[in-house]
Length: 296
Ligand SMILES: [Zn+2]
Image (cartoon, rainbow, N blue to C red; front, side, top):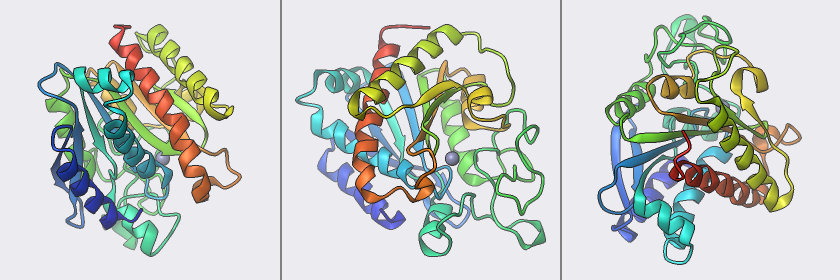
């Protein structure tokens, strides 16, 4: 769905489900677009979850999944005991379009645009919003060249989109227990670290949550996902959102790489949006219930 239509849809969800959905903006993009977040849940809670989609503009299945999640949450709240439990005891923040400037640009100018749209040196545009976080900034797996697609930016949090999210997460860090970010493509469920090899302190718990998430995905249509630390399962990268979240006290941080493994790549056909969302939903619910069972 196009960027403006997603905004309209968010307003619609907010109006239609006022008891379950609140909408607010956490800042403004480089080109001046509001950075909207939906807050799902009932009454006052102690624990919270954050989900973002569309850090990378061309990965269109991401924003589609964030919307799917919100739609499913409000539609099944009354009928699905698992969803009811989740929304009764947790707040879930959903940011469907992390990088609205880039996302819009991928619709209007360049389908394969990845970065933000801030103007950089050498007449190049944009920063990789998943290399711009203040954690091991611009070391392994990030580029110092403003014209590269993995450019880390002139300094950490140079991008207003990254700055807005880190400020929000930092303020809520005592409450937020799970950080989830949705990318494509590779079919993987990844967790820290991205910037180095080696195990996180709560590896056992996080690994078993990831393993169960992958099994949940497989149970829907038999699609196979891999899981593991981002560094050894995908590649080394510095300044990433999951490492920042984990390093700032969020004990569960997951990056999903959704379908497929490269046959269609970023151009995932419309007919595969729904099954991808259905299986991913199972994984997200599974990880959330895992947390509720107090695995640390
Ligand atoms: Zn990505």
